Length: 495
Figure 1 (cartoon, rainbow, N blue to C red):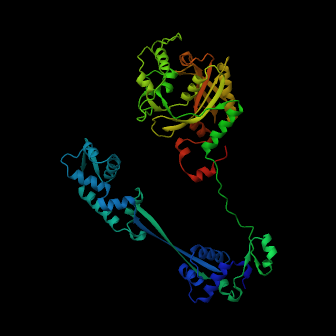
Figure 2 (figure 1 turned 180 degrees about the horizontal axis):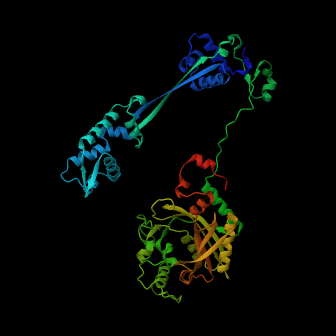
């Protein structure tokens, strides 16, 4: 006879109801009605408990039905994309790709042509042709009939067409219908219903329970401490945020202060102040996000005058400048900053004589094509040291100290070129036996500092945070950092 204390009250009620019924198999609906339950979770939990104890046996069946998805309903109403394109092609005397792109939107033309190519439609000198139109029409008809037959059981549908539509976005949806039924085992049948009365069970002893004395007539629920427990899912910072906080801590430990400033800047501060010529490729629309509102931002007239002199003939710096014409309108154009140096140079302009060591870890924007190593929005780590006696050795030592604290003690620098620093360096660290370039550095040129009234040397550096994150996390695709893959995020080590 089953020990009644080993059963919970829901398990007792379910077992008692099954013993009282002569049927061999009890469905979920029958169990809920017999036990007077309205919550399926209670019945399923009780059934699982009785199954684990060997008193009942669970039979579970899954039936899948196929329903039209969002795009499926649209296809039923307006026709499949490939069918609409084929109808148009068939009605044209000269169905060219150019005409098709003018007739259909870009998000339809490209995928639609790809679908038609798989059906035998080819491009011959820019014109669509098909050698076997009967097979194409037959396939289009089969696809339409498939969608028209929905909803339907998965087993009643063509496996070939089902696989085809599963490979297309939102054309169909798979809905699972799960049914459960329980039957008594020999051990369950041998259980006496007389010992299945429900009684108050205690799983936690409290002061109130002891004082009331109710524990005397109650049962103490037993627990199997040998069973595996579920791992608690607790919140944690994103690896990128953890890395940002780690970088901040390192720079603060090194005596730096943090800068935080606006994303929207002028081309003057973003480029002119850094002695980047106005005809530099970085000014082209494919690299910079220029704004329509505001289209321009006013700048100090005296500042523009100094930049104009520096760019055209070098001003009083001894430089020959860029020997081109300088446009005030271009300088006032509003944009999303392409680097955080724009903010550090403004900090220096506001404090030209006060020595400082500042850094920032913030977002920058460039019109990049998204691939495994580029994003249009990313983070940059920026730092400057401005004080009397600042020199190249100080800059290199600072960078080596930073990377050593990040866990990369092997650092080297190589000569490089940047418009606003001289000398200029590229920073490389050794990772898995290879040297990887992580950023640039140098000392600001006189053309940058003198117009702003800065007399002390300025050591500056900048590096991409995402590239450093890929190094720390061992990734080969920058997009992985921003994919909402919870399993990947949970498995990332603490940085």
